[in-house]
Length: 419
Image (cartoon, rainbow, N blue to C red; front, top):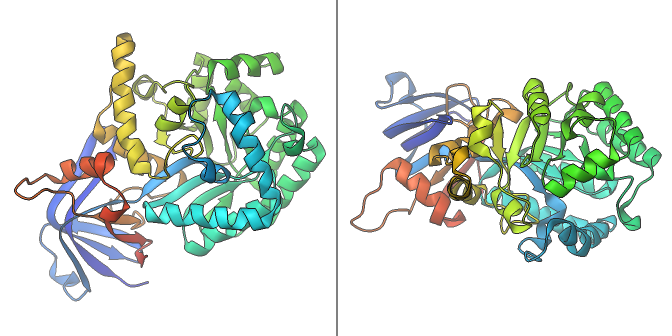
């Protein structure tokens, strides 16, 4: 791994309320991590190779903490349906096809290619119930050096017959997945009960035991829609909230816990996830497409609930996390307009932080360009019109609203430039 220096305009969000900007500056990379940022390059680094991007903007790579890799081919389809109709009419029949490796391989190859193309180098991915296909995605991500969590989905009730496992088989295959994917470098296995209504209490209990045995985290959906919340508590009447199912069954103590959507949480849910240090994931396009609702991002932030960003993909149009940064700001304005008592509007800095440093924190020191962080970064350019100069933050904002992968002129993972 070579050491080098990049020159350009440098930008990252160190906090939800603070964007750090270094114009016409140098970022020194040593051992795949940021050593420091300097207006004038110190003499001791003068011998290092220099990558001069002129006015190119150097930013952290993005993090997608909720992506259904198996739904990639159905992105932007069936968007006039509500959640459960969309699942039954599109998602479940399509996911069943992952029993065939001839189908699964090209889909998962395309997913990984798209992540790299759009600058998403940290991701938490759902697969399906199928072991071989899940194993394939895991190894493709590892081969490319992306940082990821991959989980084989669990479903043993309230699912189509062709996607429903027995409790015993679900636990057996999950343990196999956990056991056979230990000791990897950048990709880790994670428990993935689809959501509480598709998982029996014995399955939940068994997953909790596996969590402790293999010291692994959890990803699932939580409080996504009012119908889901009502159904969940009907199915689990001995529990006081959705999150309590995972807490009492021991799935929040042994690794990151990542909950997608979190649109209609109870106070009990909020208390539990905050106590566990869980990460909530805002998927703006997806939850509006299937009319689940809009996450109360600002209200949750005010209650110290950590929040990252996800594409979801199946109910979204693209794997481009930067587009969800823009959507998060737009939806927060709608939230505030229709529910002014929530004071729900967030800034671009806040949304950018969720999509970079907040999400990256689930993988370690990633998602920022601060000293000691992995140099997982993008260089973007071509965002200014002739005669109209933009500040670095304005260029970052334009990229999220109006740019695309053609504006990404360089990509780095652990200081290694990739194509």
